[in-house]
Length: 191
Image (cartoon, rainbow, N blue to C red):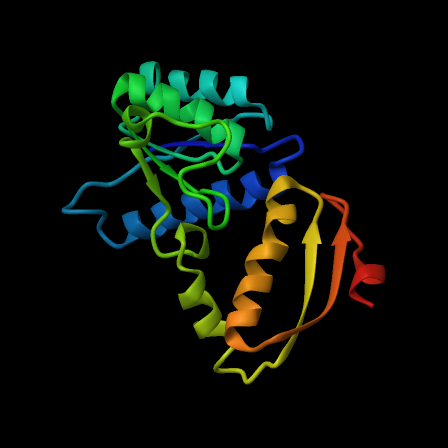
């Protein structure tokens, strides 16, 4: 399994946890017998938050490391670059698309490229926002929420999604704050 995520650069706040999650999931899967006795190895590459590097790393994972499945990246331009490589080599790429955006709006992918892309299954990013809000907001009896997002394109895409969900569920948004990507102290925004 080839993991192609931003481990450095502007999108590393998305890439690092995604990469860690893939490695933990594969470790767990292998510890429980794999799939039909098949055990997996993860080879992680750092796309450095750059689309061209993401494409180069994907090609390396496929042609030199001989991975049969790619996972990632999470940022739209990197995802599109890797999609082209995955399509060229006919390798499945499991991606984590931006919230409520599939396929990615910019840059537009052709149908031959998207047929090798599979959104991450079972998570919020794969379009299961309704399942998420039902599992988190409603059972806890929340009626008011505040939004705290970072300044990445992903973070900037979140408020409209949550505003739509909040309105649908009768929640009131009482505050909205943004922090610089990578900030380690968001106390002022939380307060």
